[in-house]
Image (cartoon, rainbow, N blue to C red; front, side, top):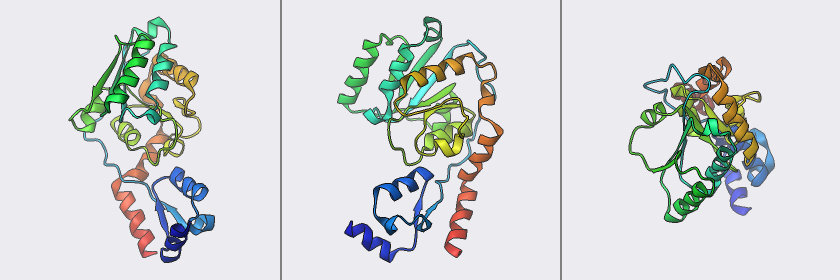
Length: 239
């Protein structure tokens, strides 16, 4: 409390990288005694993708789903596995799942046990760290799945995927609500395994998958353009 009180006295503003981060600061700390006027949201800048996907698989065609991030428990890999296990045989036969990201031996064993428990070893691969540009990794996916179970300050990979033209299935943490909006069909509550299953089914059956990245989402992506972010910082500092 005293450290937060001290820094509240010597600083004029806190810059939060998302509305979720701002809310957490207000709810979980004592900065500025909860005065929201002292907390400004300016997101991280995310460069546009060098190469973009212009076409995605039609309905009922094979899908490559990927999750990018460490195999930490709060990242929700096990929720995704449980959701996939509930899919019909037809859909599972047309899916491949890649877990891309580093891991500890303990986390590898934990996730690997779940893969075997749900009998998904033929379609799920734990890739580990992949030493390639993120754009290249994303271009080899048809859907990014980010099923984080709790707090996420931002959501960099979500923006990178959408910039590449890859739709995302994501839990409503970090920037997901403000970026994707309330009606986005592939946004689910954290930990809602049934909703993840339904989202995959919805996407699998969708014929024009690229249409899920709506004009509104594309407009929302503009605020993460580094030029717009730098303008926001400049206006804030000058103002």
